[in-house]
Image 1 (tube, helix red, strand yellow):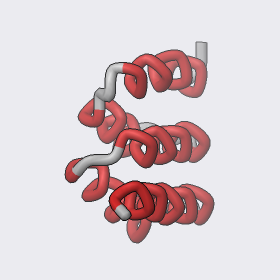
Image 2 (cartoon, helix red, strand yellow):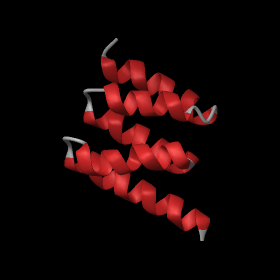
Image 3 (spheres, rainbow, N blue to C red):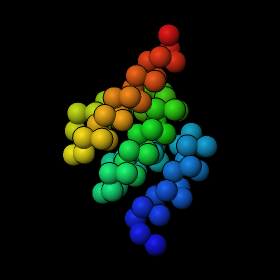
Amino acid sequence: MGEADFYKRDLKRMEAQKDVKGLINTLNRASDWEIRALAVEALGRIGGRKAVEALGQAQTDDDDLLVRMRAREALEKITDKKN
């Protein structure tokens, strides 16, 4: 089982449980850009202060352009929910 399989199995569970801490850990530790992108999307659906902080950091600091773009989109979703 590769890294992607390991994380994908848990991402849905973490989102269902609103495990922001677990999703942030995945975002910070996964080397696979696709896994980080999925974590970013889940954080955007959950929202909250800690999710916003992590998404803001990913938006500027992630090595992958697609992850940065999805982080920006996730932040926009959270902002739209508040309005």
